[in-house]
Image (tube, rainbow, N blue to C red):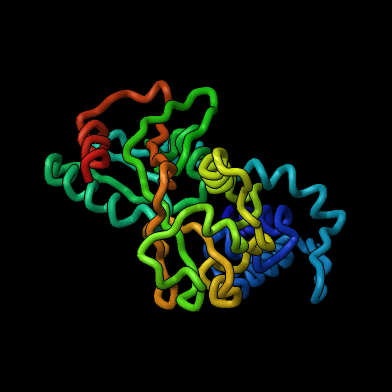
Amino acid sequence: MELRPLAYFVAVCEELSFSRAATRCFISQSAISHQIARLERDLGVPLFERSTRSVVPTDATTRLLPLAKQMPSLESAIRAAVRASGPRIRLAANMSFATRSLSAIAGAREAHPGAEIEFVIKPFRQRIQAVADGDCDLALIRGSVDQPGLTVEKLWVEDLVIATSTAHPLAGRDDVTLTALGAYPLLLPPETDQVLLHNVVRSAFADLPTGPAFGPPIPPDHTATMELINRPDAWTILYADSQTEGIATLRLTGRHPLRVPVSAVLRSDIRSSPILTTLLAALHSA
């Protein structure tokens, strides 16, 4: 039995949706459905009762889930145990960090020609766990994390972007204020999915007499930019590298620029190495 279908199984259990689980795992819905069906064949039992409206776990799923949740940590521990002792660094991130990371990796490899530096794509929680388990040497995240055994090193500060449909009443302005934006619905994912963005918004509006007018939360299987197309009266906040055609970006004026820190997460007991030191320095200056 392969480990990957078990990770998809856990995602479906937690999301109770094949589409949301597929988005979380960065694969298509048909692919995750195929993997779950394969797992059911391997085990010889159905794991979910499927309908057009819901995904219901079976009794077998209830028994399997606690064991399956242990597999990502076990996989990380296995990889860490057999890793070569040569000059090798594993950097966990997501694709939004790709351009800056690959530039830093290229610089570190130039300084250390014999080094092997891997860029590993993982969702947020798996990034943190991979560092904690020793499978990865560092992870890039927005915001911070407070977990025993881990240390956080701030790398840079990233500006956020105010985005609207090009049909929005404010789209033609050179700049806007939070007060002006407060008259229109703000579309964000649920706070449980995007704590950082909600904290940034809460802080920005703290000194104003009224807060933002939140619209309906963006579903996990939808994108913010598509929601703006469907709601031309709304606005949202994007990371700078999330811009797309058909969307207007606005410059925010006032005392509260919308920014988030980008940090490297490392184990507190990690041994310093010339390659890691060079890579961190390159990430600071990339």
